[in-house]
Length: 164
Image 1 (cartoon, helix red, strand yellow):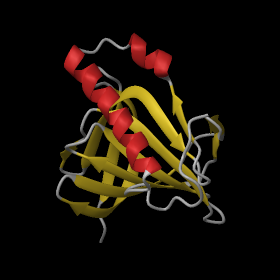
Image 2: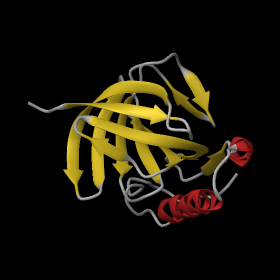
Image 3: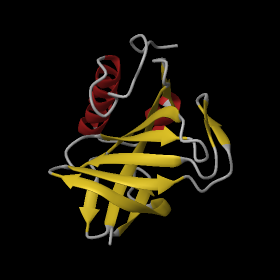
């Protein structure tokens, strides 16, 4: 039986914002891959439309300052795009994964366009200098991986991602 994992999205202070169940797909070294279902009302996130029932394949790292979600339509399975969160490295404790969100998000669309979200919100966070530097380095790494189509962005088709 595949274990159920509880994902805890926390704010920059380590306080739970939301917790939801996921299924463990893979765990190797510093990487854990989970499958979850989007269970909120439909919403537009930077041009990526999320609907209740969408399938998320979520990749967390205990040694990287981000996580990445591959998003698929819940009904037809069509790939919608990637949603990357700049976070502190994930903490894995038994059947719980904790991720401290640092506001910066990156949407990568299937055709390659890349959009950075919430830069103003990130600037307002009370982070120590080292954390702010690590978060900005993570943002650059996400962009580099998406532009070069490296994992976890290797499903990209079409031209290299561009900023809009």
